[in-house]
Amino acid sequence: MKAKIVHIVTRLDFGGAQQNTLYTIAHLDRKRFEPILFTGPGGYLDPQAKELQATTKVCFVTDLVREISPLQDLTALLELTRLLREEKPAVVHTHSSKAGILGRFAAFLAGVPLILHTYHGFGFHDRQHRIVKSLYVLLERLASRISSRLIFVSQANIDYAAQHKLLDPKDAVLIRSGVRLEGLPAPLRDVKEKRASVGIRRDPVLIISVGNLKAQKNPDAFLEVAEHVVEKNKRVFFLFVGDGPAKLKLQSRTILKGLSRHVQFLGWRDDVRELLAASDIFLMTSLWEGLPRALVEAMKTGLPSVCYAVDGVKDLIRDGLNGYSCQAGDVIGLADRITQLVENRTLRQELGKTARDDIGEEFDIDFMVRQQESLLDEMLASKTPTTARPNP
Image (cartoon, rainbow, N blue to C red; front, side, top):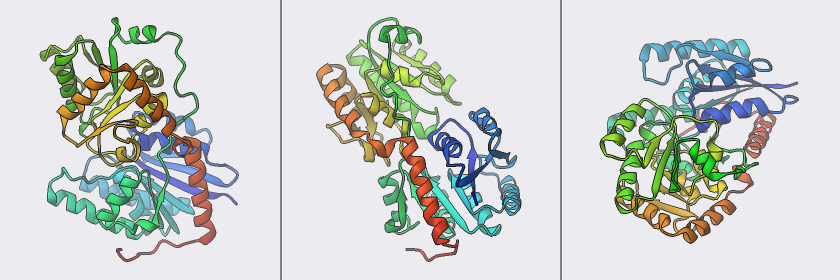
């Protein structure tokens, strides 16, 4: 008999947690598992979820929203509990912060025997107000106590969770946030032609970043780094592939700073892999991360990367060997490293080759799915119930 697995994610925005959840649901072994998706509406990836409806049950929960809203959150909790009582799944697997808390509590209230959560990152971080962070940590601790198993995408996240008493590190399961490694680096017939397709007519050293234009990704720092580098070397172009509410503000600041000939905020594209292959350096200014899939793709493409040394980045970047990492907030440090790479093509090639070699099977998206299947088999075989457990 197939095991029914309900995946719950807050909203299908364009991001690693959402993309990997959809991929997992589409590729779980249908002979052993019956996946179902619960999610809030209004996400960029909703069309992909609707495509799954031919073979998979998908339910959009109206009041499951990203923003904190006590009334909607309570309504979403009750609705999720009702839906789970109707479905009677063997396992609930939650993703993202809001769905991770509401989904796990709903599963507990509905009597679901096994509750699994993947930390793709955390809803709390060190830059929040102390009281706000403390509240989020408390909720995560409570949710962790009713979880059967906890998956993390990076060792750094395991350490951070243990630091905040969410679990004993020996109880953590490490499953990398996978990407499709096959086809990387993407084949390009003509690099100049690909660059021209996004308006880059000259032949600069191209520095690229990929991500949502939101506080976590810290795109303001991307523009600051570009400004410092351009002051020293005009033969550069900075390309940010991604979108979000901050795009117009960033484009305006680019014009005001006189950087329009050197910086472009492109919006989302379907040819990210080709743009990576047409680039020379990858830059990421995120202030916190689970395991950044764009960085994995850039490294497998053979790009040297320059990033802040945060969370999952520390699992990937070996400073000076396959890229460079700087303390979070050190814009000048990032700019200096970028300038060093701009001026030294041989160094770019050496670091890029090591980066490509460092990305092995553990980062492959199909390997990720197989690992999840093995964990589900183990949980179902042991039938470890969902029970409150003491804090470590």
